[in-house]
Amino acid sequence: MRHHTGVIRMGTWSTAGFGNDEALDWLGELQEADDPLAFIQETLDSGSTEGIVAASEVLAVLAGQGGADVHPHAIDWCAGKAAPPAALRHAAADALQAILDDPDADGHDTWAELGEDDEDYLAWLANLKSLQVRLRG
Image 1: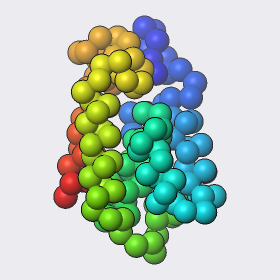
Image 2: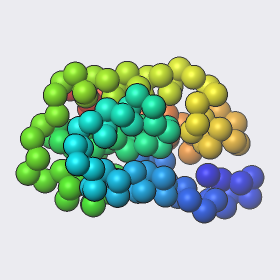
Image 3: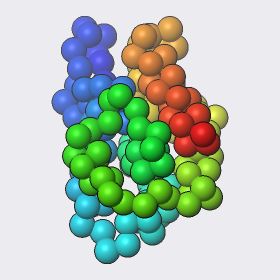
Image 4: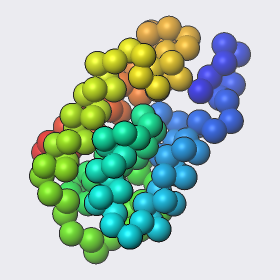
């Protein structure tokens, strides 16, 4: 997240799905989960914005719709695993829409700190929308 000085705050360095510590922590938990799809569903139902975005990125990769900025550890974890059910991908797209629709959701404050015309905020919004398209694809 940027301060007005343009310095990125520790913990968040990119608008990409895994561009923050919380998403990488979530990935570590996913890698240890006994039932990864249930863990992803739980995240979509009640996780943080960062967790929902990370879960959505993983689902997109599993569905063969990974983006250019997906963390290599996520790609490695997904390798050889079955595509997720369409219903789970659509639930992720819906969870992303809920984030987009709620200006009080975490993430908006992170990236909108400098105002809606800030390029990082617009990039974050574009990333969420692109991810939705990949999930529904």
